[in-house]
Length: 308
View 1 (cartoon, rainbow, N blue to C red):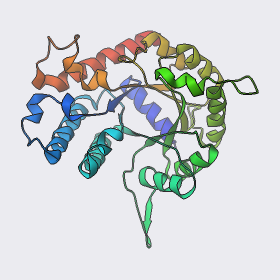
View 2 (spheres, rainbow, N blue to C red):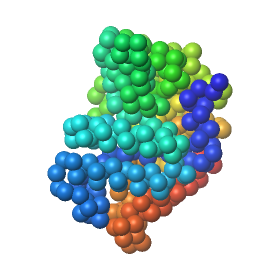
View 3 (cartoon, one colour):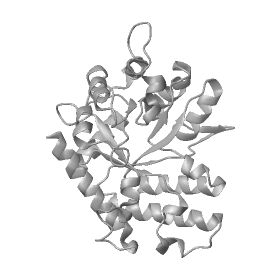
View 4 (cartoon, rainbow, N blue to C red):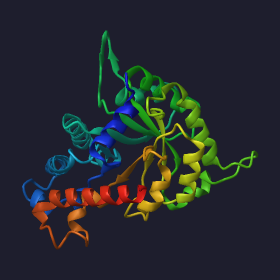
């Protein structure tokens, strides 16, 4: 049976598009044509957010293989927000998109297991086991070491799910910790990358990539290329494209000779395409989803051209 990473790579090949759409909605970025439909309160805001998310999924599900909802943008709205998160994930999977839940969990023991139960595994109630959010992948923070990752690895094996572990992130201050040199003279991010390779040894699929993979930012192309050479069985989730300054030609360094090995995130660039200088003169506000589709096609073509 193909593992979850094989299936994601199949979808990337099918769509010819190594892109994941980040769905990080805030009420203030929504088009007025959606907001005006609902009352300006918590329940109304979340109805508007869910409509926005579904419209973007409808516009792109045939050309983008995956979405990545960042859970903080749903948690900030309380229980209605988590309902919107759940409905967004469910709707994307109904459209045969993969769902990467950007949760960045990192704890140990029963706490780590509980997080894994919620997103990858199942929650047991008496003799009944039930899936809760049931996403395909999660993001994880490895700062507390192997103990914090092990429960997720076991659930990845049991339920054919996947995880992306933070290795070299795209933010400006990432080097404060990640670039520190150890006694071995290697940087912390190199050590973590080697751990990720080790953690994923038992979950390598047909394409040679493990379901236990890494987050590596587009904003540090030298390190991206270095990590591609070191972590040859590790698939990369690559944030930092567009708004953070990551360029397509730099991102190409994270892929192997067969143009496989990564998926590139764009959040603001896709969600807010209708506001961008590139598309705002072509699409009026009510056509926000068409602008997102146009930007998705432009991004796909730019990435594919860079990888040639």
